[in-house]
Length: 279
Image (cartoon, rainbow, N blue to C red; front, side, top):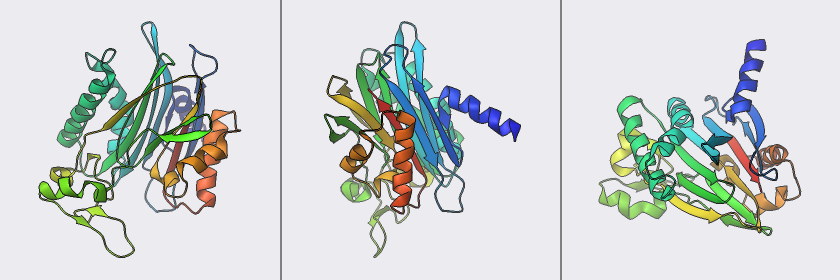
């Protein structure tokens, strides 16, 4: 029991989370006003927890980076665990990260997926990542249905794209796949996966994309906070509902916990992971 507690404290210190219930918090050294908190809750399935989180500030030479991510795995813990350990390192290794971060993120996503397909087994993972550069520029990327939402003057603005199979039917069919829609179910690629883009999923890769959507948001005086969360939250809450429910909660970890608890109250049965970064 003592060993588990020490491991939890170590993970919280470096901003990693993946246990059945886990939480942590941190703050910027560059700006005392910028803080983050995260909270994870295991869903009701008998499968192991497959959500992994990164939430930390990192000093790189004279720059500060806020690194935030949610990896929502399916059929495997190996791939989201690998992403938690390696994706940001791969992004920062790109030669033009500081000058062209959008292009660097895109290439790193593809190279990471190539490595996963080469070295790891079955299963896959969605991802939403956000890199806060020197407290001024937020670079958001995603594949799948985990989502990033920013609150500006009380108004929710989605920064990511939900990659639903029905929205990408033409691409999937042109590559030889199909999108199924059975009564009572959601659209699925080849009748299996409920997202059109993901890391891994070797057996579906011909019909599945790993191309991220990337957006850049400047953090101005209107920006209040950003939420990153897995689909366990967004299945039961709209963007504006999520923003409204935590706008008055100043502590970022308490805000993240409140969102997960509200999702549970609304009968979400999926794993739920959430990060809140307050500006």
